[in-house]
Length: 213
Image 1 (spheres, rainbow, N blue to C red):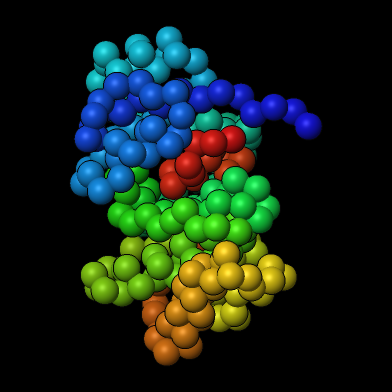
Image 2: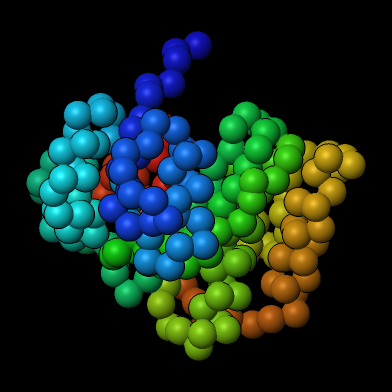
C-alpha cells in the first residue's frame, strides 16, 4: 500500500495563523472560528509562501480548475453553479474515525461540521452531510443547490434510507443515532433543494474536501 503524501496546512484566518503539519493541528485553529480561511499544500515551502501572500490568490478563485479534462470537454460541462453549498466527508479507515462538513462552494467558508465519530464510513458521512445540508438550507429558506461527489449518498437520500452494511456497535451508537435522525428528517420533511453530483474530473476536488488525499 502506497504511503500517504504529507500535507502542510496554511491558516490565514483562524484561532492561530501559520503553517501546520497535521490536519488535527489545522482543524483546531479553524473549528468554531467564523470565516476561517485555510488550504493544504504538498510542501512546507509552498505553504509558507502562501501564508506570506494574499489568501485570495489561493482560495475562492473561480476561473481555473485542477481539471483532468481537455478545454473542449471542460467547456461542454461548464463551470459549477456558485449559488450552492458543497458537502463532503472523510474517514480514517473503513470503518474508522469519520467527520463531515458543508461549505460555501465559492468561498469555501465552512457552514457546518460534525464529528469525528468512531467506527464510521465515508458513505455514511456523505449521506449525513447531504441531509444536514438540506436541513440547513431549509432552515435558512435558501434556494441554493447542494453539490456532493458521492453517487451512493445521493441514491440513499432519494430512498430516504442510509443503506449501509455497517453493523451497529456500542462504539458507533452516537453515529447511528444521527443516522436515525437523518432518516426521520427525510421522511418528515419536504424540500425543493436540487442535489447535484460534483464533476471532480472537470473541476478538481469538491470545495468541502478535507484535503487528506
